[in-house]
Image 1: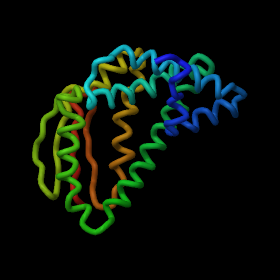
Image 2: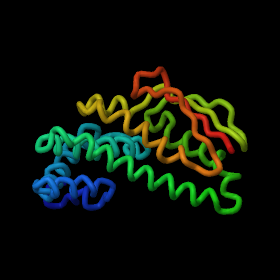
Image 3: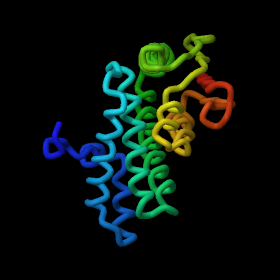
Image 4: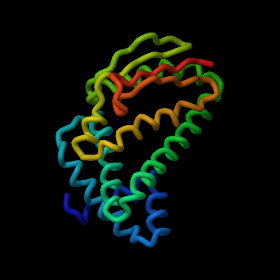
Length: 203
């Protein structure tokens, strides 16, 4: 696809809008950075052209964040991580608010954990590049661990290892403040642990 036919992904994906606001406030050229980052994203994407449709979702998320971070870092090296990480966490926080509202609808809490198991098995299973293990799963609590994570591999490959922990931290913003469920985790691969463990219990 030629550059002129490519859509700027940071216009379509509003997750990182605050990053461009910060660039403008700091006297930078936000539009130029947005275009440069989008070009970098498409360059990165081509590094893995044959991923299946499940795995490519995770690869794209890594490339979106890494391309923006590396581009902003050229111009604002002391602020790039803070700006990109803060934008990502705010998006996760808003997602958590939405999930919480959905779970407060009658009956939704009763199907949450079974739905999560299906989602984890499909979106975070071997087809997606993960290796995981499921423990106890019932209507009251769910336990599973991720033993190998493509986010860690991808971000190492993109020379953005410092972004790995942020993807794990997003889970805490999404699931850590639910009214009807408690989220627990003791370690993550991104932070040097042997696994990413998840426990979600009904309050």
